[in-house]
Image (cartoon, rainbow, N blue to C red; front, side):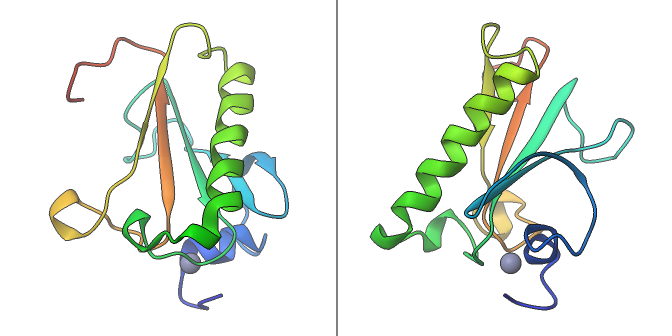
Length: 118
Ligand SMILES: [Zn+2]
């Protein structure tokens, strides 16, 4: 764990967030209403508990972590009522994509019609 990494600290439970799911590999949490990052009526993040800098750093041995993140997202999407209406999973890699936290996280957006690009 990198001490300076916010998402590692959330993964370790040191920084309190509105958790929707937690297990030994992944944490899912809600982005609170009114928070500038929030881009849709439903917007939550899935993070790996292990520090992986981005999707560009995923290796074969991370397979169980990545699978768990997707399984947790599907469970939370069901809880949030967007499993049937649909949702988007997105991740940014590097500066040109606007990655601000350099720890693997998947944005999950739903609750409204999303355009093809946003
Ligand atoms: Zn980290």
